[in-house]
Length: 375
Ligand code: HEM
Ligand code: HEM
Image (cartoon, protein in one colour):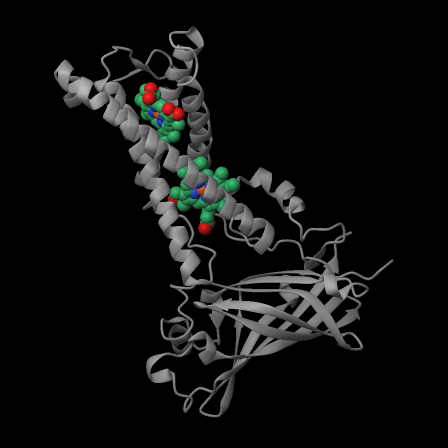
């Protein structure tokens, strides 16, 4: 059988709090129904039973979105979503903006719908469940008929335009989530999915093949060596995931994707660690993740390979060449190697640290992975 080093089994990644996952998918499901029902009901022959029923379901589901969003807002201080899986500031800022806009729209669109039925001259109640009737907004319901007649089409238009914006932005947002899962192969989608759905989607991702390998976390390390005032110091990352797909018979098809939690960087010295994770150095709060990905390995010796890839660290993306050796051991396959980074190219070490008199520009990144094939 061909020896194959494949993607290690996904290392458990922190998941969004259950409440965040529940509220997210409840809102997403309801919005899918609302988009479909809204579009259909306004195009059915007027006055029919089907149209009436659809309007009632639409209004009840719309109020449910409003309630879910309010609950989500109230619950947020107790269980906030995880920080983004983004290593560069541009996409992260865009993602934050899209999330905030989506969230705002999940409040504004149903409020506009509620305002619309409140100014409607038709006295049709908003039935929720089990005979529960949702009240109209009193100030609007009490307006004079002529004022209502003026506002009804305006609010209807606003509701439709904002709802269309919400649906379009959701589609873009869903496409971004799928892009992260399929092309970046990172944890963005996995950590938002309800647990039961994870295996099927992981299997569906293109980096997952029949010959998966798993990384033995206890016997694998990802570290770095820097030099301060001429003296080398060592550090390591305690939280990271690595996916490796590699068949020595087809090295050009190989692929590595690694994701590193920057806040897990440690040298074992508390004061140095605090400075290193701070804004002038790695800025773990602003750029919580580093991502490395490479496709295609080049054999450069017996069992030794080079992988040219891209490292996204802080707000920079730069080419990096990894060199590593593979060795079969009784415990599994060992992949040992590394790369040299120039810290200043990533803007690491700012202000008084940007000079090289105290800390050298070169930082060696080293890894030593033990991987085993999943039976
Ligand atoms: C997130 C929540 C909501 C979404 C995404 C949504 C979406 C939509 C859409 C797509 C349409 C049809 C637009 C068209 O093609 O003409 C529509 C129409 C409508 N929606 Fe909503 N809706 C929401 C909440 C509500 C709520 C809470 C109510 C009332 C309680 C409501 C009442 C209506 C009414 C009465 C119409 C018909 C408007 C017309 O006749 O022009 N909607 N909605
Ligand atoms: C249809 C309406 C949707 C709305 C309104 C919506 C809204 C949001 C919001 C506001 C967040 C930020 C986290 C939070 O506040 O809970 C979020 C996160 C997320 N959404 Fe959606 N979403 C929708 C649909 C989808 C769909 C269809 C997918 C997947 C195909 C998806 C995948 C995700 C993922 C993976 C995250 C987590 C991002 C991260 O961890 O960085 N969403 N969504």
